[in-house]
Image 1 (tube, rainbow, N blue to C red):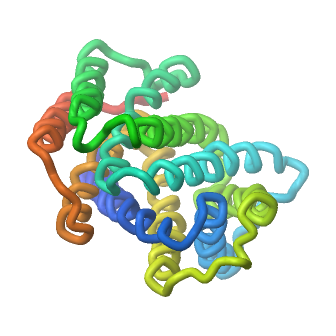
Image 2: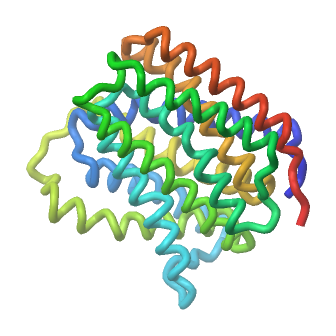
Length: 295
């Protein structure tokens, strides 16, 4: 993997802004949509522009070829499961808290990358940076105003969702030669297939009357926070590697707090601010010692 250049850092920042803004949109969407249906509509909105893009560029979609299994597995681990878990978690916690909890991704991502890749090994200084960032998350659990006996389980569910992103990232590396647009579209189509029966059987979405606000939030989640963001993510992942890509999880809470405070009027405590400072320190240490790798 190459050393990060300016364009890579810019793309990572854009991805952080997009995903940071996704959490308050998820919160708004949960007002009208149950988790499976929310995830289904989100990936459905995402699949349309992705499919049209592949057709326009005459890219073969390999989702349903004889080599369909990797796409199905990634669609399950990288989209279906985390989207559902994060929707469940965000329904009961502040949107910015969900964003902050996503900062656990670098820790699980680095551990997985160390054991399952050849060029993403953990170094001492990098591990220090990751642990510093993660300690900011642990610090939040001492803030009973934000995380308490009523919602701590939902906070843990959100963390579990972020872990599946790391698992999906490892699996995606196996398909990095299959093309950005193809992999993104194929895995998204498979997630639709997984989520459709779950939504129909467990949530009967046709009996609900969603608000325009929630539907618009879902449209944004699908087209921008899923379709566009996954294309950017796949590009970063294949060029710079999993450890660099998972650093976006340190940017997500910063933008998540900004959007949550100014757009959702969510309360920001002093523990939240200290946690963010610790996370920013973790970003600096990890970035400073992530010099890139070559095969």
